[in-house]
Image 1 (cartoon, helix red, strand yellow):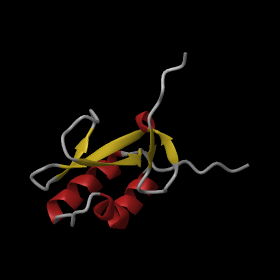
Image 2: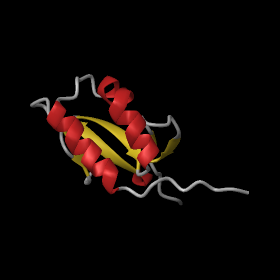
Image 3: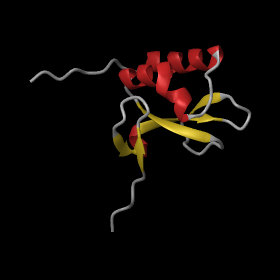
Image 4: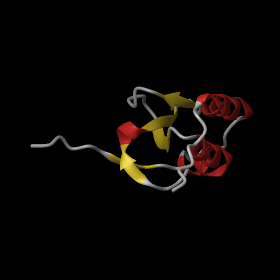
Length: 94
């Protein structure tokens, strides 16, 4: 039998996909917002596709709502720095 792949909704674009296709961002019990590459950190999590447009949309609005937190300037800068390391979205013409 095929292994079940948990589905998650991207807070940037709203599309549902397997959670391995996304990066988890977690609000720790201390209230910090951090990137969680393992997907196992303790705290409230939200998932974002590894695409710049999804990160831009998430960081500017939906992420703070999903995590029930107001992003601090440091948290926002760390997330934006991570987003800047991602490749720009590829636009397919055809």
